[in-house]
Length: 238
View (cartoon, rainbow, N blue to C red):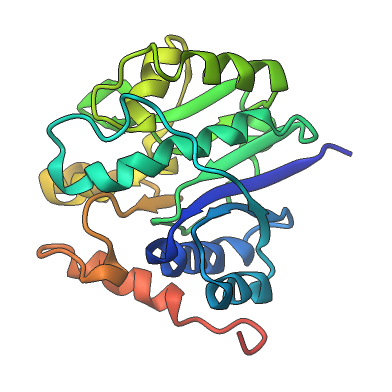
């Protein structure tokens, strides 16, 4: 039997609510576990996560001289932490991993991606009109320790267009298998090209930008209500 798993990164307490909602949306649709790489999480929030069944892996922050450097001012503090998700490429005890950012919800089962992806690395384009760049919020990958070591060796050398792991990974993976946008539909599509949004068979909705649990963003109330529906959903009293 193949050893498959989902992974996410939870860096600081501010992302705990997002991860809890993401897991609530995921776990009714999968038989595979969710592991969370965690750092700077309070004991009370660690208990909240563990009580739901999320398996925690404490990690140290991965830093880069390029992290948080750029013009994306509102997100630069967060981008100082996002390189830490690179650990996921080294967990070779798993045959395949699907990485999910903590600010998304899974609205349809995506387990088939473990078997359907034919390459070592696959992701979705950022938007239907920006297809040469992938978004690192959903990644299907085959982890290898040697791959992780090479990534770490290059984290300070390769450029990042946005100051985050996403820009770096786009510099690293020049070839990548493109997944349908339905597996990582960023909310900007909803506001910028609503006709296209209406045609997407949504499997994953990604709350890029301002987060629902941190105040939300004007113009996205309908999507944020969906997020809160999952957040307040009860499973076994939890």
